[in-house]
Image (tube, rainbow, N blue to C red; front, side, top):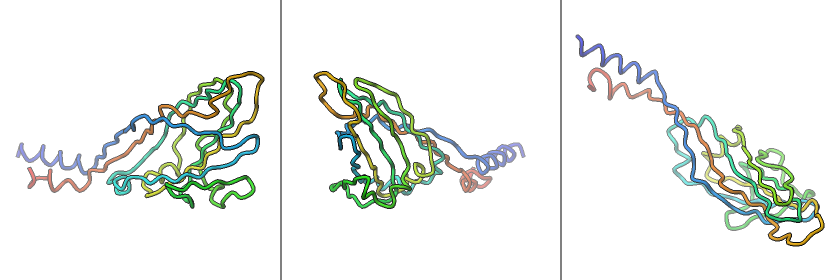
Length: 192
């Protein structure tokens, strides 16, 4: 009787429990060159996600990102933005360029991840909060980023190069939950 009680208790606890786990990606750094001067031009870029992210046997509860945005130019103020879309027409090997006059209809549904002016020689920490689009993106076979990097102002001086925005140490933070219901067969009375 004493052996039966702990086995039954363990079985009940496992079937009623779930575990929450936080996972951080490796840091990634990339550069976004200038796409336009004074009037934005948008570049749509497609990224194929690994197949193993689409069949996760977990509930994705939260996806956030942190990164550092650097404007290395000593002369130009840059207005940079990035949006995440679950629809797109670009392919991984063929980006598509848009202007404000021919933006695709799905642009309005895309999630803004980042949009700000970055002063010359600036370095800013940024956090991208979790959202429904961000959560859905984890399980998609392909996602699209719509980016722009526009020179919005120039101050007198020399040494304005390079004219780019650097995204440094971007880390994706994912919180997942694994439900342990269904394990009672393995840990139940007959399984112990």
